[in-house]
Image (cartoon, rainbow, N blue to C red; front, side):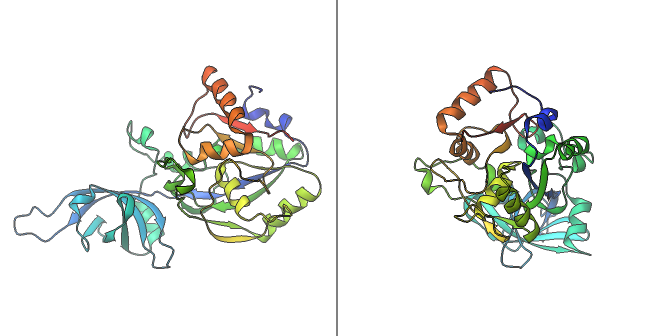
Length: 318
């Protein structure tokens, strides 16, 4: 184990290595509105808070969302966010979620950009409201494709000067997309982890990115995803010969001890919480005992956890 800082990466990685970067862009997915209910006594208004989770995969434009307080809404009632942006509760879904149908003019994306706030993690949002600075601070420097409701936080450590230094050192980079959903961070609540259901997230590996990854593999370079989201995506698209195929669509891959890694040789990631699928993923990569040693060291050295915390570069033996 070596204690280092992220700006040391050009001296740690090798020429010919390839970083795989998730270029998803976080949506301003937190909304505050008023319940619309026809009453004679004027008691129909109630403040409703909405956090978008995932677009429904049927092409309807609907979203699953967390709504607080959900008990104050009936199916078919509207939440008005502003005069040109509202949503109707279609129905309740399992695990306290709900399905919303939006009515936005001129279009959903521009309405969300106008009205929505960044979905900061709860431990930050409990201390302060999201502000305009968060619209850029909670994005990676290469964020390009809107669709995530949480940032791929290992990527927040990078800036343009570090990217230039890595490129000058001969480290290559490829961009893929996985729209991070809130389900990634849900704790595992079952004793038998094989019974834990992962929420599907939409991803894409372009033919160009797949070709770049495969060329690096053929040349003997290492494939190092930045973040568990990029790792999960390339492992979803990996073939038995360790090549990666182009990919477009959802993935609900659950990587836990016993998984045979076919695409990723290493991983840069932040420090994760107990009982999380992410902790199981890094245990699968490094081995449970080794991860326990790494985390004991991180705690002893007062490394920071959570979204704006410190990072680790995990290089398995062999």
